[in-house]
Image 1 (tube, helix red, strand yellow):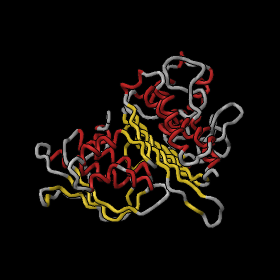
Image 2 (tube, rainbow, N blue to C red):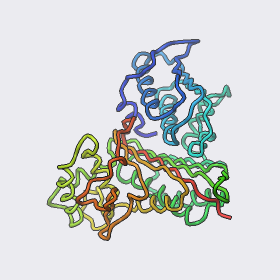
Image 3 (tube, rainbow, N blue to C red):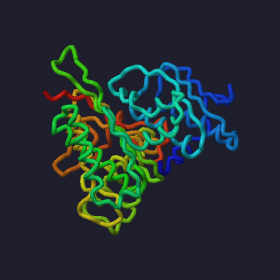
Image 4 (cartoon, helix red, strand yellow):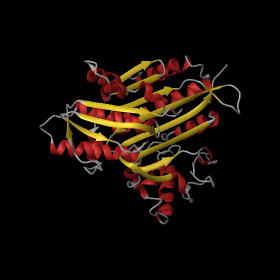
Length: 378
């Protein structure tokens, strides 16, 4: 995947594990049950140390993870990216063994190409690479959009249609399907247009679940979207508002907001958080041309999906910062600004403290984890 080496570059060589060769393999053995961003960071450090010490000796790697509870979909997709980098770029054989606890937001692990790395079948590494790039089968939709495909003016329309067709088989209602497809296509389009890099889309639908306190069946709909790039989520807007003489009226208001927020920056609320939140504002764009349109309706779409959803867990990581999407914090005020706070005031109030945080992984580019639980349509 284009620029996936940046993930390795940005996360160092530090790991809790020593490099040991056993049975002509280098083993990473996880000694705890939680599989989260901190573990992925540790694995990346381990891989970088292996590459540094054994760059010419292509010993296979065995990730022995044991019995684990995976935090969320993005966590295991990031691990897939690390394994793909090892197989495709480093030309190493990779073996992965684990037993994951069943959870509605990580049930998609049952369709993951990681499972191929725990088998002894002859062509498993080739099949891993193929499945990593694309699969539409049963409960799983996977697609990497490559930059070379951007020449197709109908590309995003085709993807939207594919996602709609995929979701129809699960009796997901039209309003849900439309919102999910719009979110995915908007994020993929942003990646292609602003970062000029590949975009990974992964969508899975769980088996139906019944709830004791609620009638009917429910699906978990889990989405991860990733691009690797030197450009972070708010990078383009940060660069744009430096060009004070070319800003339109709305971008000038953003600049005024920046000066107010700047006096309130702290270890909890940083300058990059401001620009990340600015990237979700209506008619705010990082394009260098001064246009009157632009911006994203993404927060409106996510808010709509969360409104349909019985439960949800949605966030984005970019660089070393994380931003959570909370339904009550995503309302537009009458001037079209989203405060990410109870006051619904972006221009003069800082965002709610607990929606911001440090990302365990330094993410070069942008990665979304979107998880919804929705009622099955009769």
